[in-house]
Image 1 (cartoon, rainbow, N blue to C red):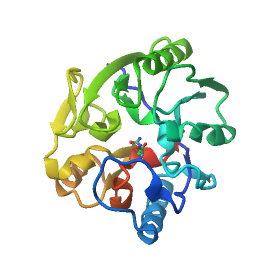
Image 2 (image 1 turned 180 degrees about the vertical axis):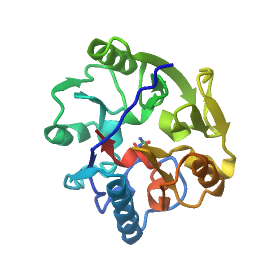
Image 3 (image 1 turned 30 degrees about the vertical axis):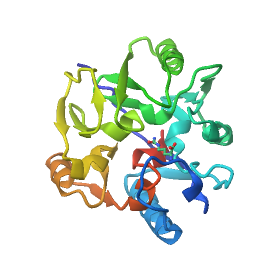
Length: 259
Ligand code: CIR
């Protein structure tokens, strides 16, 4: 198996707007406390810097209360940027303001009746998985697959129909190449036989979304089983408090675009 080895030098982020509580959510955890949001966000940014990334921050925009979840707006691979067309109507305007900040040479737009959120795209082991979800439809997945394969014909790209969680990466991420963390709420017939899959307890399901960066890893704070698993593979572990973003269905991967 030839692993997709990705290292990053930059992160594009957009700090939350004060009205982020007006964004979409499936949770019943109450409204985010903006004073705590700012502290948690600052911790997140310093964790990215500690992993060696240079940050580009774009202005918050109250027209987009979900705008901090920049992961959903683009899929980045080498010097290719595929600009997403978010599945939720209220988020369709978000990608346009990020495009000028992406230095990628080739930019391709998901268009027409194709919808895709970046949170449904997982680069792991030797492949790219595209989740078919409430936000990403078959046409969106097909446009993304065609763009990736046109750019790099060696890429293995597979579709993962699923239910039970918002985005593919809400339910599954890669702890380290060959090891996946999976939420018990995530249901799919896709066979993850290329990796060891660790199904978390319900109490730790939120921590199925982790963010490995350049040999270090960000995990959400407060999940001891995931912390213990991470310590098997990493010495640099950033435990990042995420409670206020969780209220809006956001996880660690959602808050940045790495390249
Ligand atoms: C939404 O529903 O679109 C936002 N409130 C949360 C997006 C989280 N993004 C992600 O999982 N990639």
